Length: 169
Image 1 (cartoon, one colour):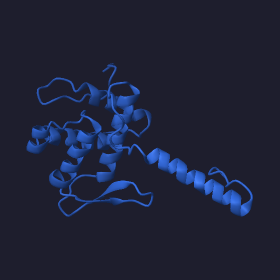
Image 2: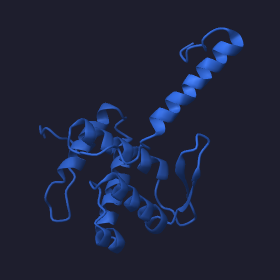
Image 3: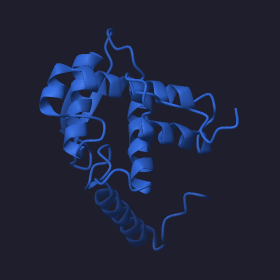
Image 4: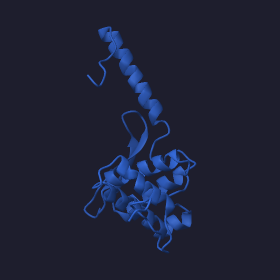
């Protein structure tokens, strides 16, 4: 066919799921054709589970909710829906992060799900279709990474009298 979209995501009622269809058709611009179905499978599974889970429905959590709602739905999905073990603690930069450990009952690809969701919200934000910050990016992470890099540059300059070597070298 000669349609504008190669991939079409439909809702259970048969109507198109516009945001996921748009996302699906953006993926081949940055991924191999073989990776696109894996990304879509994980995101669609999460979206479907969230729309059917009693707690998510009661709380009003859904794929396009506010960032804290999306994170709550994702936590529920990972811990209950996919039987992952979640541990929350500070990382090396002091950020409160959640570590996900797969268990024998886990039947999803957790890294693919997390990367796909991060990319989904990036696409929707870039197209002004999601009005919040990316739920999968810690709001303070960029500032902390910049501060860490600045401290590293200053340390190299103080110790060696020069700036650090560029990564490309």
